[in-house]
Length: 349
Image 1 (cartoon, rainbow, N blue to C red):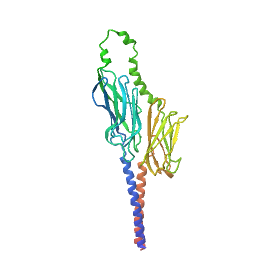
Image 2: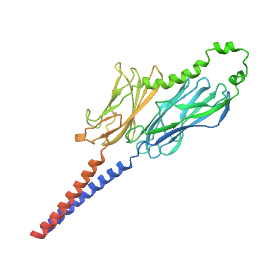
Image 3: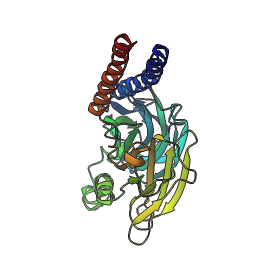
Image 4: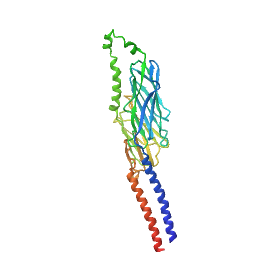
């Protein structure tokens, strides 16, 4: 009888210890989640440039303690001073989620991490912008981040971990603007010329445009469809092209189009195993030619019966209080069983 009780106590300990280790690990993982602390800055390769020359702008990211899943770099500048030639990914960005596009006073690109186990971390170039100088300026001309610039982190709440951004500027020397500046003998053409109006209008329009056209939403419903294939859905401008990337061991990418009601929906092509994932959604607005990005973390098998509904805010991570309670209960239960078995063995054997 005594041997049987000792065997039972041993089994209890063998079962309890791995469970305790698991929950301690989960608790440590929660503690390791960092607050949003990522920054972006723009650094030109020279403080001044002559008209007709090309300046290279390095888009620098500093992830601090964050683990970055994706970054949408959206830039604006004065189209009367610069002509955009290209925007490409930097050395710190392993993948391109949305190819770089340039326009009149705009440039944008969306890059992503290699996988959930290989996030973008550290400080370095995440994108490179090339602009050709069109006309001179007596004061520095700036390139700045548009309001829809976004940096998504793995398992973070909120998902946008970008805290600040720093513009860059250069002085453009030479050109018709500077040559014409001393000439004041012909005021009539200067007053009647409409050229001063476009110098500020494009920037105003570009800054206001993302706010008015921002209609992309994301919801991940893991209860609606079982078997590791959650329903990923949301809203976007009618006809927008939606690119969905699920960051797993093998990332899954799908492309859908928002219907006439502005709704879109999809499910993973391959069932997902139990665990936590990040989904990044990018919408290309066909009429405006702009893009916007949202992301969310969700858990398969993390709720009651595997149910878990996560909005684009990224909420849905386990609370630290529930982990502590479970840990204490498991520890107390194990001690009661062990000491109870020993007392019984001493009394009756």
